Length: 303
Image (spheres, rainbow, N blue to C red):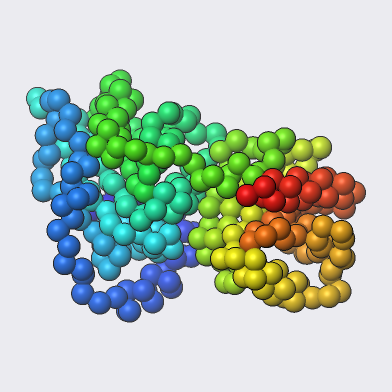
């Protein structure tokens, strides 16, 4: 039985996709999961209370209550779940280790679930504590821990389990290198996200990063979309401009300004295989949009 709970809005939003994926799914893959089992922690005074369970794309729905496509959208590969009990106590621990196949994809799902106000920890690449739980990012893995009836020992127990898993993973890497392209001024810490598909709701805009900013009395977002090569990036830009319509476009020296009913003013340009831009710029703040687009293009141009 899953420990993960989702809001009614989330479940409603994912139900149709879930049904479609379940209809298409074939038999569950026959895999041993031995490699991921080696990551299960061994902590003094704690033992596994039951056999671990392994899930794959075909049966992930059985564990996370119909919200599996959130993880599948980041090319989820495998999940192992283990339950632990503390000797001589009522305390228990649930361990979930998700393999997303690559550090970029694991950052994607991690970034989708963290909040800027979370109390962050230097565990793996990064982790954060919530009441009775600790989630962290380490290489291609996203790990979730939940301690039950741990009382005042909760944070220490969670950190002990997390550190053991990090040691077993080995090299945990860091955040995606492209995050360094985002201007530092006004950046709201820990709002950077990676979106594997359908950036800004368009299927042809793939593999993008977005970050939130607060500057000069307004909130806006910067984004970077990664093309396969220069031609692919130009093709994405051409399709995006076509989708927005000529009447909404103003060409400028470093790209375009687009009037949009949802995102206000969008500043977008291309440098090499990257599209980049600024959105949610309100009228009267045009210089802010231009300045951040110029900064993004300069930072990306050195890559």
